[in-house]
Image 1 (spheres, rainbow, N blue to C red):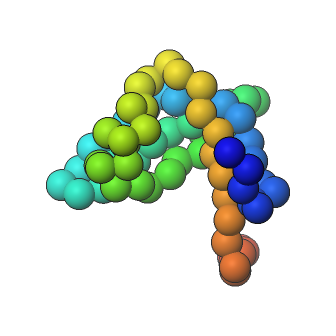
Image 2 (cartoon, rainbow, N blue to C red; image 1 turned 90 degrees about the vertical axis):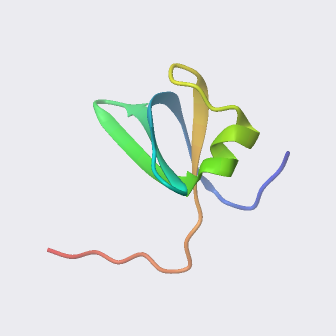
Length: 68
């Protein structure tokens, strides 16, 4: 599959925390950094996500905000 997003970071799933409708998926991208994605529970099931498996964080945003 090809996608247009250039910000792709490979890692390993460290956690999946399911809520009522949304899951938070933690992906260890190295150097002690965890990226957390909020996706639907249905997406977790469709992708058959499991802790310990390889995954890619794909970041596509029209706006990026920075605060200090």
